[in-house]
Length: 318
Ligand code: DGY
Image (cartoon, rainbow, N blue to C red; front, side):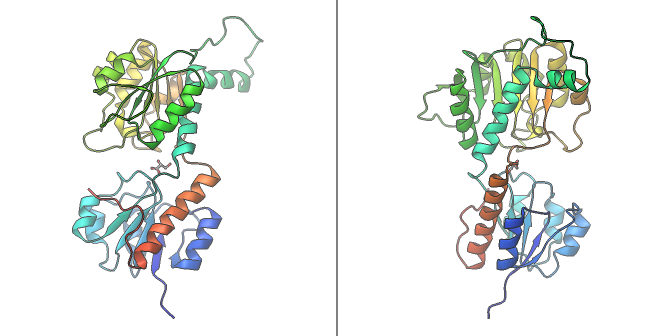
């Protein structure tokens, strides 16, 4: 009988995903879900053929240089891959794969939740009730911003951006977008991010974190937006300059922000917790059982194809 490939799985995954993993590979699981630092990751990588990692694992240049030669594939349980140095992997002949497509709807749902929740002051309302400070309905209490007829700027019109547009249209929003390429989409195209920002009563970010996009939403760009705009980020925290967004939230330039991702998460900028006009979620974009299972199966499909000598369905290249 052919020996099963040996696989290191860095975090605990949903049960059905782990079941398929142990049926398919000789698998080292992480049942206690303790994050592996680089030393532990290197240690556990001995005698394995591949790694199934998550966005929390920093697979950087140094770590890649220290990986045993036997490792030939890194399959990330995520669509984002900024945590992996792809060039360094390519140099060492390590294939990298990701899980695009399967988390589109779940992430778009969370973007809408944040958009609505931030605009309608859901956090402040929740707190009023939980802290037992609600004295009853009143005509001027926690007045928010309506979505109907407002312009939603979508920066990055990939799968998730388009799914957000579809949902927001159902709320009567006017969709504007900027993307590297113009799409055959009913929405209004802007050929620069700056042009889009100028009309964005609401802004939703949907582009990857790269050295070029780090800190993209800075003070200068926030100042271009209409006063009292709402900002939503379900992409990566690093695309926003935290100090600039916090200043805009304090001045009222940005009325509210709904954030699911943070630079340096889980150690987010403490200023966000202090603001009443932020709605904060702990990176829940893909957190439905259906989606996490689908992400796991997609990661396994990549591994299976690779170990059969085929091209994996979702290779990542630079
Ligand atoms: C991803 O897949 O990159 C997401 O951020 C995980 O929710």
